[in-house]
Image (cartoon, rainbow, N blue to C red):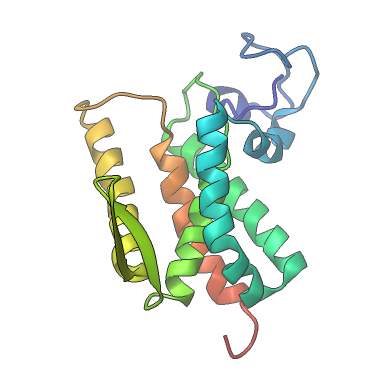
Length: 185
């Protein structure tokens, strides 16, 4: 087993083995535990830093709305649901899934639900700073996730991004924040 989610292996309860995916594959990790461990591995430093930037910018406000312990549960639940959605959408995939992007997408959805009118800074064309509402900035980001999923499914683009995990995390975050937020928030 590995610390990554492998959809083809996840369907087999207690399955340990299969092809090697990385340096930690010699450790026997049952697939059900990879629903948590996959979130703590990343493909590279850019992948990790991108996820942590989004978590740093939006996470504290979501945490304030639900509390410290509930935020931890929220974050982990978004990540687990993201992995399950990815695995359901691609059940025969032998490709390992790693990264916190699904959990972070849940945080983004929660922030968008809680603070749509807050103005945030964005870089237009990665150069020009512009201040826009979170609804515009994050709404565009959400639409981008769906557009990239559609383009990938149509075979127009290829790549290692698990768009279904992003969509699963977004849906989980939008639903869970309505249930977990503190009264009056």
